[in-house]
Length: 498
Image (cartoon, rainbow, N blue to C red):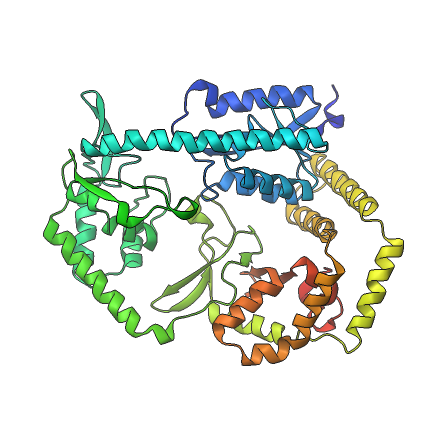
């Protein structure tokens, strides 16, 4: 078959830590996906993987997140998985992933399970398979929990051993033994913190300067250091995590600590001294709660280069929005850069105060909605935009963008945004959004910092920051606000043809 006529596709592969035999291995999944794709006349242009991760959780799935991001960019037309449960074991999350793919014009295909999501029967089969995966996961969790409780009762560790130990086979069971390369560093961590002169972030920086990385191959952060300094495993204890509560969350009060068979790395006196330092700092923070910093754009501000969320983070020198791709194994040209949050929040505050609709906005909105209703066919426009994306992908494959890939991705992104814009929004929702904007100027001036943060989340879907220019480069409102934003000329330079 001529490769020039092949459709483009992606492969998503994953195995959990309990299923690493050959039938579930990444290589085996990819091999079968490529065979199926070839028979479908599809070329796999990119492979995404999440090795040794659970599909029971939304978090820590960088491979899946990258695939969804590239789907929105129009990099491929089909997404292949070996089985549906490789994608998610929760039906609601599987449906959410499929909706994101469909909105991007991407069709999901499974090697082991054939279903057509464009037909009622296919949708029913998909739901049934998703439900079975969820049942299997719940049942497996219960059975696994019994085994973990038994191991903990006998003093053996469950899951990955903490940094400073390594897992070795002693007799017939895996046991945690001190790692000669890192056990002394662990003790020094506790000793430094116990003096009260060092904070979690400073210890994380010290570990990084020494060239150490976590057991997962990532850079140490204040969060990983805090977890280590609170981990009783270093006292020679092991634990069972207890039962799951609401939404699968574990209750700390149900955690059972048992004397382990492994050797402690620190003394009880040193551990408790560190706890006292942390408690004193917590009391100090509580006494200064009035100065607690609220970040207007926490959760919605991203880097314009890698599209990852920026982390809202406090330090001795102030509060920042920080690019943290290197901490999660990613790459970005702005890696490690930060900007003072007060500067960004002041900029967004000025923008929000200038979101003023013209006096005749309701009349103009009705005219616009009527024009769309009479002369606009959303399906034809979707097809036209998808054809544009396909032509751009073909040009990319032919090398027409060699040396100028940023231009390609910017053009793809603009076209994809136009496709996303066709998401159906009821006129009633748009009118309600208009009423929010009408009162926004007065509400913003009277709002508390917490209320301003909520207003940002209600109106803005995403805000991109350009570290090279040190400014907000783009603002994306929620769909119901998009048509209204076009009526506000003062912010057009930030909207980039929304």
